Length: 260
Picture 1 (cartoon, rainbow, N blue to C red):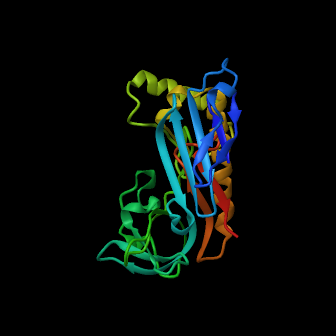
Picture 2: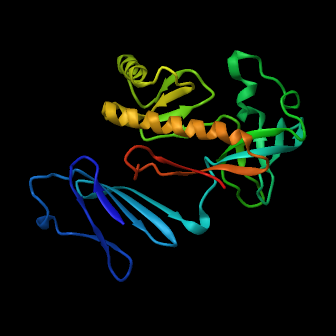
């Protein structure tokens, strides 16, 4: 259990009371020379993980992940096409779950790359074909998970798109001058040998270069892991990703784990 200030060089321990509620040391016991404008509080139990983001003592974000209902969104799977439905322009993919997952032609990256005219799904996929996919919607009821073949990894400040080549800017960031400034910063920080594209997130406007660089390095690791996963025999989960928008780790909002 750890409490950490993200903008001040102060850290302190959290204690658990008998009801399992987080508590912290009295501010009077800490060095008053430091001002903790932002705090991230993490509470981990066998049943769930709770993360709270505080700004000036007020809760801004609260995230809860329960062990028994952990989602599949963003996980990468090596799947196998079990059925192609030309009438629905969709396919069912076996990714090793109880129900086959669903892939629509609109979510197939290969169908729209390089500005080529869209092709029907029966010209892209065939039964028995192996396919790297990412979950974009969890299973619900009798419906299986929804998939995409466009792989993405979300960091704190950037989204990495291994299959793309361009740099996009969040629509929430206004002004063409600011867009160009962020693109220039990213180009300066990117290693010369890096491949793939990026989307600059809103948080990047106030990020330091060292924070952006840490995000780039981490996302490159994610991309490398996805390339190694191509050798996995389907159907199987290649990479499990736990997404936390509060960025409880210092560099990125995505935790990645290779599936055994």
